[in-house]
Length: 227
Image 1: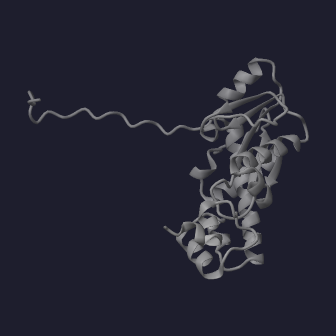
Image 2: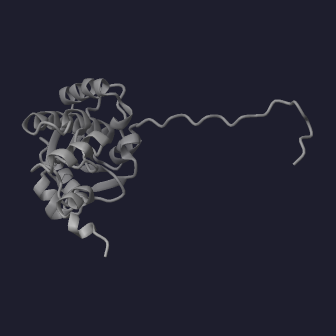
Image 3: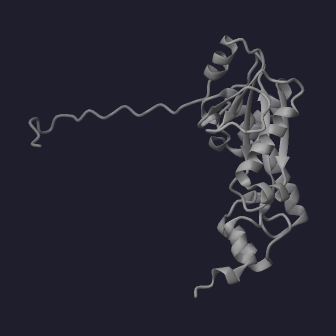
């Protein structure tokens, strides 16, 4: 299409404001009569090694720490600072599903198992659980709502994502001392190039997830041979 006004300034679309979690979902639950609303999230679906970890958090009515956000958007120092503040003011619990459980159940169901365990371990039973994701764990015994990208929408889920991430990172740093050479203190078990090189050089440790394709191929190379 011909420009009828050459040289005229072109209107640019306004950049979208970054979404930040709020109490909107919690307020909906409170308005329905719930008094204790819990957020639950998990971390560690993607790594090649280590457990999957979930945290459940019931934030206080007042004194919610500022700066809560999806843990992936925060630096390690920010996560540590916020996790300490959440743990000091909120009801919270952390739970895990082991490598053996991941292999037995698959990572999806193992992550849901860790979520259920975290909720069950809370010092007070929540009236409603806000779950990060598009499905509610089938064994969760509390009323629940699934929220896609919940860690970017709900402050309770964001707080849970931070506590879960900080906890699992600390676990992987400790496990790196027991199984040195894989760089878990830096990659937290995720499939970085350095981690993959270490696997090729050192082989598979007892804490690697043998059901994951990258590990399975190393353990069963004959299955990858072409006819």
